[in-house]
Length: 176
Image (cartoon, rainbow, N blue to C red; front, side):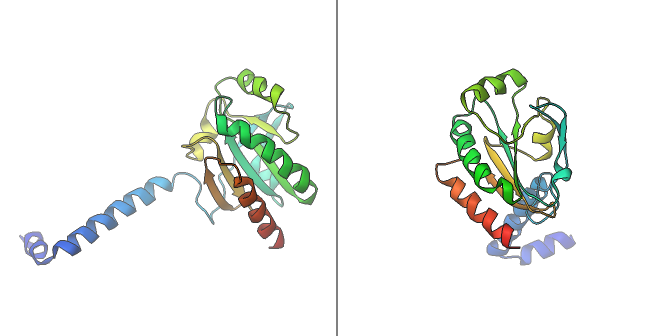
């Protein structure tokens, strides 16, 4: 009865606003499972193509671009050489790129890497655990992590020229 009285006093506009707010909050909480800009980046350890394991938290003090990619992804094939150029320019200045391959078999990634040579670390997420941890829904997806380990940029997909946005963000983080 109380709800019915309160409900009858709400205008249509108020009801729509309430519904939109509820919807926005539900989407917001669903996204909270992955990385959140300004919050600590979820830590992970993955096998490296060069042998051994790499852990994200070991990169504290560096600016890190974590790039999720797959061998079947056309935009990933375009983006990897762009990342190589960024890496060549900024690696000596404390910028690291971790290319996280999400294929279910390492061999699939290695076939692509025979065609596209990169010098930054390539990591294998064959079980998909880190992709789930980061709530990756698009290929490629890039997460930029600052020197303190906080997420500063989330970028799903790739279009030619996106590397300029990454470079601008790197320069900004270097000044901090």
